[in-house]
Length: 486
Image (cartoon, rainbow, N blue to C red; front, side, top):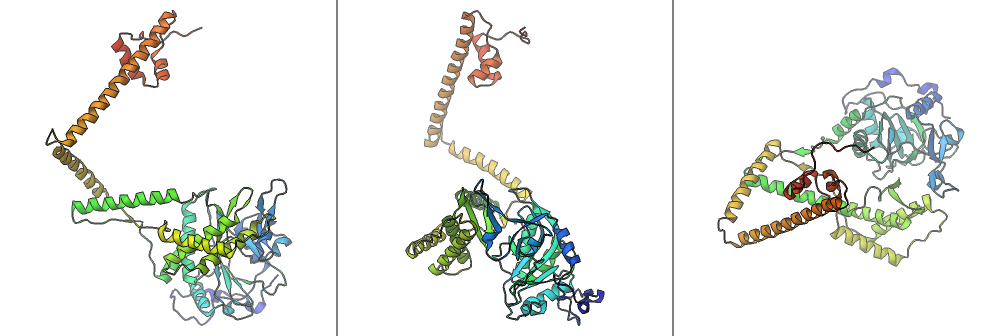
C-alpha cells in the first residue's frame, strides 16, 4: 500500500482556493500524496458495496465466469476489502441502477514517466488546477507511470434507477459526465463499466499510481455548473415557444411538428427495442446476447453501423478501412468476453468489404441517428387558437362542399350514409330476431325467460340495448330483483 510521505502532508492553507478560474496561485492545489488506509476506508464506505466485479489484467474475459450448471456467463465478484480485490487493476465502479462516482478516462499522454500528478499532460494538469481552486478537484487521480495518461474519480451523491428503467438523477449523471468529458477532453468511448481500481496493490510497473486528494462528496448540479462555465455552454431549452405572424403560419408550424413526430414514430418502430439492443458496454462496444451465447457477428455489425453514423454526423467520409476496423474491434471484444469456448471465426476480407458497403448504404439512405431535438411546441394560447381555427375551418369547408346538393361529393356522401344505415338496420333486425328466439326457446321449455344481463352477455351488446329490443318486441322482463334460488 502506498503511504503518504510526512513532507507531503496536505495542509489547510493549500486548500484555500481562489474563485477566479484564471487566478495564478503560488501554491499547488493538487498533491501527489498517494493514499492511506484511512483513504481506503472512506472510499469503500462511500461506494457502499459488499462485492465488486474485477479483473486482474486488461484481459476482461477474466472478469466473467461461466456457470457450469446453467451455462450462463456471470460477472466475477470479489469481496470488498479482500486481498483478491486489491490484486485487481480493473473494477466495475458503477452500475446501471446505482452510481456513487464519476469516472473520466484521459487518453491524452504526456510521455513523462513517474506516475505523479505533475507528470500528466500539461493541458489536463492546468484544467485540474482550475477545478481544484474551485474546490471541485477529483477525489482520486490515477496516473499511468509510463505514458502520463490518467483517470479521474469524483465522489458524488449516489443516484439510483429501477431495473431496466432510468431516472431523472441518472439522466443528470449522464449529462454531467458528458459535459465534464468535453471539458477535460476525456475518452468519449469510455465504457464507464470496468475502470482502473484505485486500491490496487502490486509490483506491476504499468499499474496506475493513485493519489487521493480528499473525501468530499460533490453535488452533480455543482459539477455541471462548473463544466458549463468552462465550456461556455448553456442549459438546453426543452420547449421553444414561438410568435407566429399569422394563423396560417401557426397551422403550418403545427403540421410540420406533426409530420416530424410521425417520422420519429416510424423511425422508433424500425429501430430495435431497448430489450433487443440490451447488452454490456465494454470499451465502447455494446456486446449483444443470444441465448445461450454472445452474438459476435451481430455485435460487430451493429458497432460498425454505429461508427458509420458517427462518421456521417462528423462530416467524415465512410471509408472501408474505418468501418472494417470498427467491425474487427467489436468482434474481438465480443470474442474476449463471451466466446463460450468457440474459436475465433472472423469473416474473410471479401465478406468484410461487403459488410462495409452495406453499412454505407444503410447510413446513406437509411434512418439516421436522431439527436436530442428541441421540441417546437404551441403555447396554451396557440393550442386554443388552433382549435378555434379548426372548428371554423371545418364549418367553412362543409358549407362549401354542400353548397351544391347534386355535386359529386354530396352524392357519394349520401350513398355511403345510405349503405351504413342499411347495414345498421339489418344488424338491428338480426339482434331482435336473436333476442326473440332466445326468449321463445326458454318459454317452449317451460323455464324462466333469460334475464337482460344474460342476453347482453350472450349477444355481446349493452343491457340498455337489450331493454330497447325487448320493449320493441313486447317481451319486457319482469320488474324487480330476481328471486334467489335455494
